[in-house]
Amino acid sequence: MRKTIQFFAVGAALFFLPTAIKTQWNNYLPCDGQIAWAELQFSGHSSELIGAGSFTVEGWLYLNQADSPVSILSVRGQDEALFYRLGKENGNSFYFEVSDSRGATRRVVADELIPAGQWIHIAGVFLQRNDDLDEMSIYLNGNRRAFSRDEIDLFAKESAEARQAIIRLAGEPGSEIFSGRLDETRISSCARYTRQAIPSLDASFSADSATIALWHFDEPFGNRIVTDVSINSFDLTLTKSTAVWPLALDDFSVRDFGSYTLLLSWQTKNERELYGIEVQRRNALENFECVGFLPAHGAAGEKFDYSFTDTPQTGGRYYYRLKMLNAAGNSRFSQEVGVDFVSPAN
Image 1 (tube, rainbow, N blue to C red):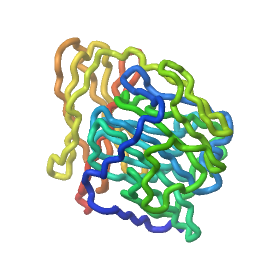
Image 2 (cartoon, rainbow, N blue to C red; image 1 turned 60 degrees about the vertical axis):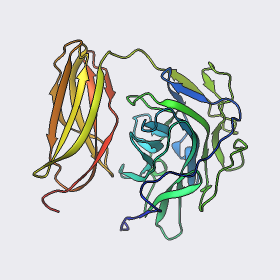
Image 3 (cartoon, rainbow, N blue to C red; image 1 turned 30 degrees about the vertical axis):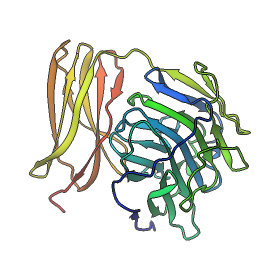
Image 4 (tube, helix red, strand yellow; image 1 turned 180 degrees about the horizontal axis):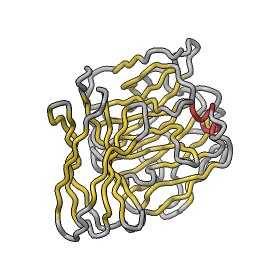
């Protein structure tokens, strides 16, 4: 029988963290619109990217824009099913999420106001406990900012189909191109942080017996290969961003519209190659699903305002995104926008 989820927020909900002054060790991965993400098609069993139980995903992040989203590191199956991911949403929300054996996504979120133009260390820790209540935590600059406890059977360890995996750093297909820098990114087969512990600011990470993968990004700028210095040699290949359609999307928001209804609104410009926009929704435990479709106006150079109303059946935290499709069948996604919803049943 599954245990009841408990959630613990650590400290104030929103505040400025103490500044972590990271020294310039060597190079870093510059994400300035030219790089979409770094990727490895991993042919081994995906459980090798988790370890026997507990694991840690961490990296150093530098934001050019304080509210920009980024998928710092993700591991997915060949069918793009999520195993685990560490990242930041549009706004101030940092997240760490894993999938359980039923395919549901377990997520912990820390809302922190991080100024642009400085380095921050972020770590997602999965701690397997003896009392069957596993623990997921987020650490920012060594401070545990949020955690949750639940009974979680990891999807990547239980699924027979999870024979291959895809590792990606600094972005994913369909996501917004990240503007900033990434450095010293590591996967470990242990819970490296179980209490307040400031990460080292004057030395790069070292590979030890618990290191599954470690990328220093010390290669000269312009190299397409990112070397993993662990014994596993999970080297990544940089994927260059390609020219995208001229479509511009602005002011995507979700708000309470009254009468137990949510109102989504956004604006587009240069729809010349746009076929239509699919509205997608998910809650904290499920994947995105389509809840509506709006055909495009298809005109170049003009601005158009869109709106869409939605009434979920149950209350809770919901996330929305837009999937924009062109006539050739290609697609791209907006950022995710979260909202709290109260249903009539509540």
